[in-house]
Length: 183
Image (cartoon, rainbow, N blue to C red; front, top):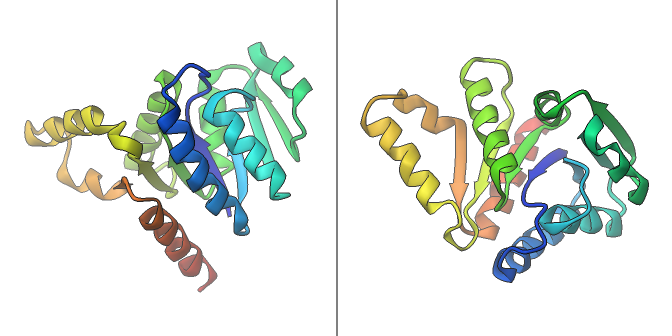
């Protein structure tokens, strides 16, 4: 399966998030999964790229024109250049079968909310998975619950994504999706 991994490109984040994410990425790319990512070779994004590369998986890099030079340091199976970040986000969603979000910054949160909103608007049916590594997304998830509680969004939207802080649970969920696709 083609799995988009949304995550941090920062080298300065606490190491606990990188180490935890590396374990999940290693297990994920041991299987027959290909990487779709934002084409940056730093932070957790670099870990995703290097792990997929080490396991000889397909790698689809999608980046806006402003960062096209990032491709010079990578070996992607497929390189897609977009005009801007909005087009890149659409490409990341469209090129993937599963959208997996690891700890990340504004870009990752933007991609997450875009994925949820575009799924709500029936623009795609991709599975959205949030890996709440080390409680990274706790405050954001609390805010999302406030949105439901105060009726800014319908409760059914909660069914559009899966959240877990457990690597094995994430991997089991992905394997369940793969089995359903085979049927």
